[in-house]
Length: 266
Image (cartoon, rainbow, N blue to C red; front, top):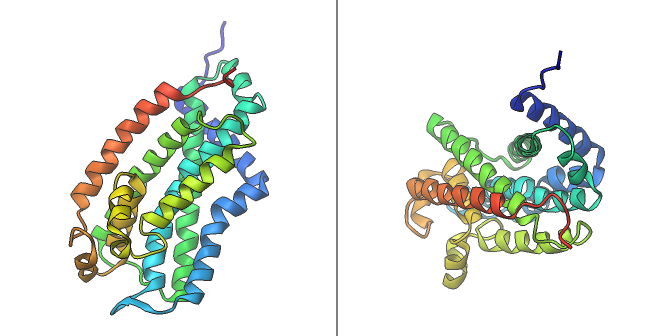
């Protein structure tokens, strides 16, 4: 009697456990993905202690931006670097030759992204509250916004990371291709600087990409309602944020399906 294969979800969960264990064994990845945002908060929060506007400290603003940036770090950057390396060393080719459904591999990656994202958010909030007096939201609606922006942003970043993983020619050069893109997006999307103080052309360019909208969504959670008047649209535009992230989610699905490769191109 033939043994029944595990379900897709069970295989995906098992693959997710393997992904997490492999990630934790790579100290460089753990430090860069999980600790680097915390280190930036410690540095910037210690140096810039002024108020951006009355009642809003730089640390309060920066925590919102770093949480949004963490979605891109864990999803887009992490996968766009890790997958080419796995393609180079033959991991993907070997997995493709097993009975494991292809989707289980991506479920495993998604589990890793979700867990690392949650860990980042918790660490940033703990450091922000304990060292820089960051105020947590007290309104349940704000926590709900945090949930759906995190969910949509993480899904978009994961899909775009999978799609972009086909761009680097090798795993060794993936970091050199991906990291500058992420840094440019961070500097132009309101992570390090107040978004409405950036040049107009930079605001328009950043508005094409999802990180700009993730940061605005996170600001609506952690900054007072009065700060919405300082946004480009003079409001939080939560409906617009959901729409744009939803569009990028569809784009990510299409690109991931069209571009992902299990083996190196020759």
